[in-house]
Image (cartoon, rainbow over all chains, first blue to last red; front, side, top):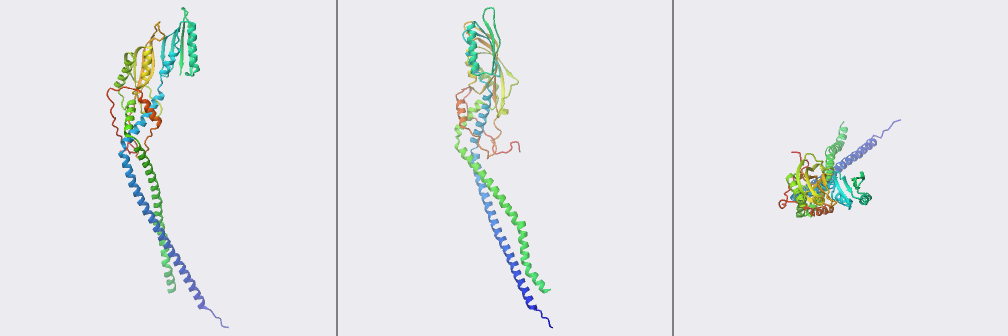
Length: 178
Length: 240
């Protein structure tokens, strides 16, 4: 019995397959090139536009900077004024006001009380010594001191000494600590 | 063999094209895309800086140079640039004279406590101690004047050597020492980078300036506009 092979069919099928593959590869390659070219054009376009925008904004920036430089005197005056105000505030916050202390000394200087010694220290502590010529003036003096204590003007109010002398007058010393 | 060659030839062009595309993507397109992103970031930063500069320019245009000059003259009178011991002496002498206080002697103090707080390191103090004698009321007036005079003075303690009481009045005749501290501070070295915001002078600061206008002023000569010119736009003032 004679065997028969259909060689034409097989070759034809292979050729068709190869042709199809070739087409697909070509299509893929051209698509790849096409996509690449499109993306490249887009990227280069965006790059160019961005570079132009940067140049334009740089020009704008230089113009504004020049305008600011022309107003440097105003800026200097503002910087000096603001800086000095801060420094002056620092000094004033630290500066102890002596006028209220003097007012307090006056307020406790009742009739019949005489100041014999007075010191105002840098921290605002008042050391006062004096003489009251009667018990009534001593009471009045103490009432005034208690008023200062009530107003909480001082953190500590102490009498280091209170005594009666031979003349019947009252010697006292008082410390008012801020 | 010829058939194989033909197949290879047919596939060569697409393969070479594919390889070229991949190579160009890796070595040209991707770096360009990165450049685009980097430039976009730069552009955004630059636009932000422009808007910052525009705001600063608008702020500068809204300020009145004449008003600022007046304020600067005033605050420089309150806190001068250079320490002038003779001016401090002259101011103190005027206070004593106006308060009818007898000034006996004075002495410059070697060490004075510097202020503490914001910007305090830039402030230089100068201390002078005065020996005086006065009655209590004049002393009180002197204290009031000292606290309300420009340039700024700080009383750094009062020590009474003797208190002579008079029988007729409870307020005694005092003699003692009072220490004054005067202050000075240098001008800023520069006004900083160009995009730095202008120091704000708030309404509170304006009220403070108005308050300072109410202080007594001591001037030997009429106050002139102080010519200020500071270098601008230098990031590091110490770089050359």
